[in-house]
Length: 290
Ligand SMILES: [Zn+2]
Image 1: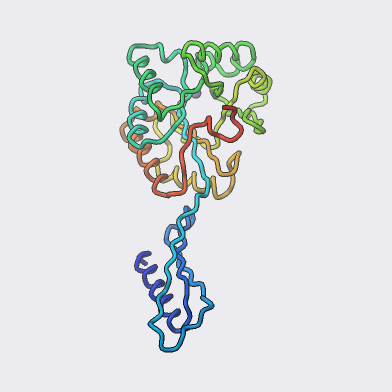
Image 2 (image 1 turned 135 degrees about the vertical axis):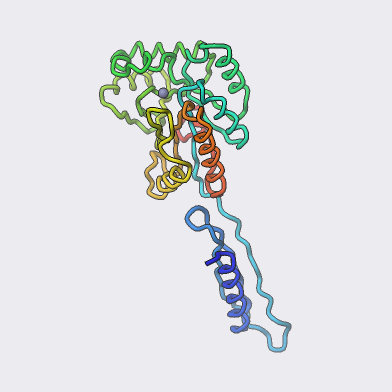
């Protein structure tokens, strides 16, 4: 059934019911976000009786604006700058949404193109730059990296110094670790001592709630529709670490592919169209010291 014509017919029935009852009624059009997309029409019976011989009843239409329901998405991109960063940057600028980039220090110095890219990201209002270590766990040697807390602290410090980062927000490579406000979680026990050491020297370790996964060819495993569904379900089922807030992890390298870039663009457009999500950078996440 066409929702518009259904809503229209409900409206006509409501007006008819009001005149039959000879009472003044308030037609309230209630907009609900996310769960219900069509306006719902509610008839609230008035208490004034229609005076005999008076002019025809006029229904009062009251439009209640959609209330802000406080669902925030923190879109974050890891591992740049790399071959997918430029496409991602164009999409984010086009969609004009704030996002956070967890940058690998040494990749900024791989060449002129990477440096230029980092400079333009740093000067754009849409990108918050955060620390993803200098070497990305000694080039993905996670077990060895996390064995030595001092070495890990130094790697993050090296990244912060070389990129002149003022933010203390970091994301640990290859580990979903949270040390944010009252949230304290470590996905692998072996990394706990190092995670605690990073927190002890003042870093805010930002993990993620949901990942936009990719395969070994750097292709996205799910399209925009599937991700949209997953995001909706995350909020509906209250799976987030903080209710009403979702940290989404994506990786720059997946957007080197034109088709996957289009999925990113589609996902953001579809999230906006829901009219109940807002976007923020992770420094606005509850409990983050600013
Ligand atoms: Zn990474």
